[in-house]
Length: 353
Image (tube, rainbow, N blue to C red; front, side, top):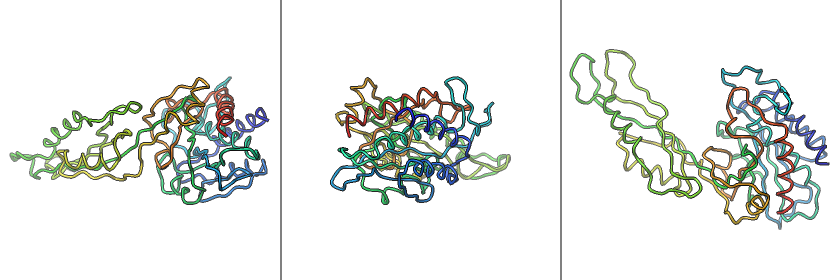
């Protein structure tokens, strides 16, 4: 059965690659996932472009384990040398947009869910969600499903981790900041030039360190990523706009970070766009983690954001593929990684379910 499911999963991945599914535009890939469940006689529900279902013998008295990955993609970058929407198989490599992030994870989890679907002796219920709008943290993604699906006690989020255990993940807060000055004609003396005032502000952001370091996730990482000011060569602008990307470890809440920056930063103003993308983790002694360690898998903290950020329950990030290939030109996944991924997912859940 596993070999058959694996072959079907790889074929589904090829179809997903050849079906464009940018965030918010996933209707056609959602239809392919619906067809998977139809072909395997599994009832499902759809909300927007999210497809979800539960195991056959769902029991309200049991805790529920979420299996989740996404079927949207970023847009292909200009460095592609291969057609991003063509599933090109070259020996063990399968090329195509979304193959690694996160199509390989999604089809592996679909195969795993299908394997366990009609088992009667499970300790956990299984809830499967193939979600939309992960790449843009959109309003109609996994976050919109949490009030629709059964209450979740623990989750496996499928993202490329080389099938190692990402037991924690940094959160994200993006800030919009302003540095103000006195507008003037460029020919006149100005001791309050907003652009020059920004030099010290940028240095402050480069030098500032948050006190608390996480054993798993390390330091909070703060990076100024955008700067914008001025409209003409002969006019000093009244203000400079900055964008600051802050990756938050599990020692701080997003609210903590916002409060610290609003109190200490030398900006005229600094405001968070959203505080909902929190850091996430799962205890090292959780049964899922202990089972994975027993299978020889490493544990680590992940610097990249995923749908874990919207979950309030313990969650583990785990999947075939390599995060370093995500969003790169000529994205690919090894077919052997999918084969191994399905096998390891099943082995892991056999010990917990």
